[in-house]
Length: 411
Image 1 (cartoon, rainbow, N blue to C red):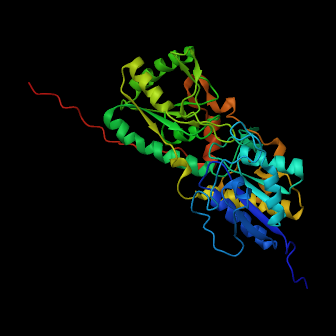
Image 2 (cartoon, rainbow, N blue to C red):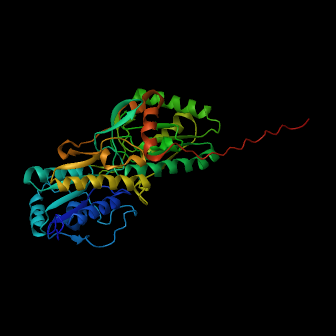
Image 3 (tube, rainbow, N blue to C red):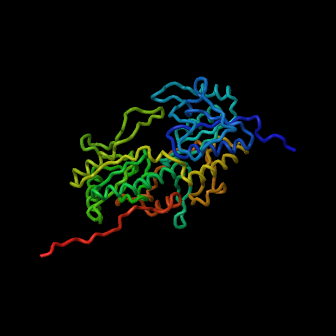
């Protein structure tokens, strides 16, 4: 009779870094449960890599209840980079190594995007620390090498925990905005998170956004002129004289004053990975639309709404499925890898047999493919619609269907 579990006496630690998503707690819970089942003592590292600096800041997750439906991360987060950067030139990787030894951590699971998992990759490659990366981003631009089957042809796409919940939030928000927009017959410019990729912005089209701008297609001087004409035409064709335009926060917009493409920043300060904080492009575009077309336009920033709230059902099952793959990696002690979905599949097909694992050295960022966006129509293609339907269901838009009869004065 085997009295001890396979990894009894071993310790696995989990950290989450970078921007939060509604699926991180679910990821933590699912990984914790499977690691504990194998016999690991499970620690949580607070505030990302920051929790392994100095004397360390860790908690025991092994035998306590954990709410994986509640969004965000109970382990907290930061944008701490243990390696030298412009903002912090100090190499703090030795502090990380010291605490890994002090707390007797045998395996490290890092939940994050390219920055957090990129640092984990360096710890693995430089020092041989056993690490497993776990994908996380609402932008959905972390290269997972997932394949999307569209009409019999497979195309590379991306599927990251957190994206589904954020996309559903943007879909619902966009649908709600129609009521106020139609009441004033305005053009609404909705700003959506997405520094380098338009994956999340596309979810606004599922709530009825008629036009979309993404970072992958710069808005040059010539393209802007065409854009204003297109916007006016679409607005005048709209039965209710109402138009919603979704724009990624990282859209490159031609500045008439500086005569160059620029992005709009909420703050010039950089984090430890060299990223500024975006915000405000929707107001800039709305103002120029009003000036160029004479139609009243307003900017609306979705901000942190897509990051907030509970974990959507698709993300809940996705994190569990990827945690199943983590179990496989732990059993085979196959480190330096990240579990991914090999295929873009609907909810019922989120199963371990659809997963794979990629080398953390090959993660990087992956923008929206050209075939997912109609450049000349400023809209997402049928292929993108098929991709996202797998994840959040069909497009939906609230509509006021009553048509009032026109009153004609009697003679």
